[in-house]
Length: 533
Image (tube, rainbow, N blue to C red; front, side, top):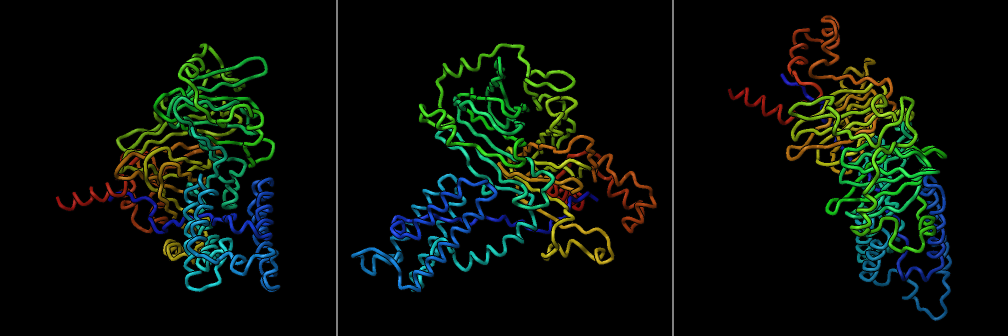
């Protein structure tokens, strides 16, 4: 009998941000719309966590003013404009075209939000053609209002997975971009243990230069793809290091730093874990200030460099030391995780890990870094961590996450089935959480949560993990060689599982691998082959 991972019972529903389009060219003629746009622009100057409430208040004030105008007979000024000109919904086809253009302008960097905006435009057009009053795009349809009411429950059921729509593009040029993941506690208070951390992704085209800047945050980088070079400017010297795929390196807060992509074919991709220092959990890139400081060059923050310029900046003197070494001494340059001997390795996957004992730059962060390459069709786990919270970023490939969570509400049928009869008698109850994984997905596995990561049948799944609270953490396997169940006394096994200890030992002793195993489909294929034989 083969070990099964945590059973799949709950289909994950990702919540999409509702899009608030700003205005069409026609609506800008009316004072309420102008005040709405001005109000929303002012919201952008507020703290990030205050912006959603600010925008919502702007919309509510706009609706209230429209209703007052409607009761007052339109209230519009306009001199010689006729009734047809006063009505923004006079031409549904033209309004649809203008609405789509506005969606493209406002959300050109966020495809998912642009798509949702355009769908709202289409629904609005259909309402007008049916003779409806032509709901304003800010208000949304009844379907959307119902979706909005359902979203908190859906998000509450699985706050552990983040997709493209949860990122904000802070910097974008012709040659690259920087994305920041939303604050974890904005999604759920269950993630309070990592509220002081943020995740960011940098992508830079071949032979590009990222202009000098500094951050109000400790930064831990993992080179997910490509080759680069990083320079840190200290008070009386400059330290430069070449980077390659698999490198882990730290940039202390406040240090001026600049980077280059020194490859002429491949993009440079960095996954970053940030810990803001002045305002915990708050991290902003002041794009306007950077543009003012570097106002003479008009190409943006990430710019193209010539081959000769790249060559000059890639030629670094040897023997440089990484600044601010730990208590055991200074470490030379970045730490390449892929050069380290794997912690676990078999035909189903490979795991590389580094902690503060081997890389002193991790010491005061209390963070460890791991890279897992799961062979297609294979899986990692099930296991759980005693103290560490895993913030994982999918670097390449596709797969699934399956996790058991004791904190989520049991409102869904899947959750109720997962609880079983035992919960009525006071036994622990877990909700089964499942999510599809693909490149760019960020997922969280809290301490004490049994989890399995499964690679698709088509390609390997590569994941980098930042383990917060790594010091003194222990990882407990629930299957394979050395699993915690096998260490129980025979009587304890019989009492815990309600079957003879021999059957428990047959199940949990079946797999001789450790950490990486056959995935569910491979297990099923193996069982089928045994049955046919």
